[in-house]
Image: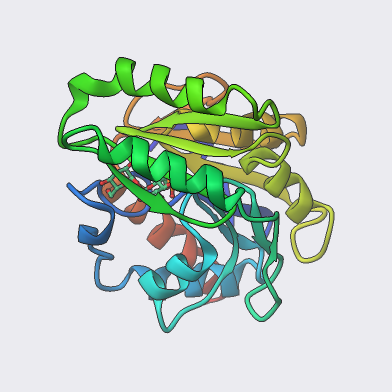
Length: 248
Ligand SMILES: O=P(O)(O)OC[C@H]1O[C@H](O[C@H]2O[C@H](CO)[C@@H](O)[C@H](O)[C@H]2O)[C@H](O)[C@@H](O)[C@@H]1O
């Protein structure tokens, strides 16, 4: 375990966790992911040990996260910060949906590329191309053309996906919003993520004196690397158990 991880504790830190490629392994399709048995319980135990200072921070929608981790529920930011639920029982605050005519154009655009498909998440829309990675440059140019009249929108490249969303809300703004209130405020933030879309959150936790941990490969703004999602899960299991061990 990297040295910086050994100084992290459930009683002192706030936990912000990316989902795909961090907590769960990447799969061929968004609906094909498997949440390992025991992971929701581990996250619930860690949230309990950290007095609730744990949030999922994902490109998926909050509703999709709830389905994946059911019956557990967590504080969460979805659609790359476009949605935020400050604590598990709170309502979801969401940016407006993308213009429906624009979404329809993007869906039609993806339909013209073999191997591409869309995931319409309301305030953001993902165009996936994992089945045909070679189309990435042409697809990206085609998306940029459609978005020409929409300067308020941004394209986030992810793992074999382009995510279209409003600029201004991202995983970094989500982390800052959580850190402004209890039970997160006053704790040292930790963000664990694997993707370029996590780098805004890495910057946010670093600015708040926290710890950014990349998964898989080193990433700009991250000071440590965990090799893969199983290593992340082992680390979180260790953290969730730690306070109970101390009390013995
Ligand atoms: O921010 P995250 O929690 O990492 O979510 C990022 C995106 O994850 C999903 O897509 C990615 O994972 C899929 C399943 O492993 C994979 O098939 C796809 O190629 C990846 O891009 C999800 O579908 C997106 O909505 C999230 O934004």
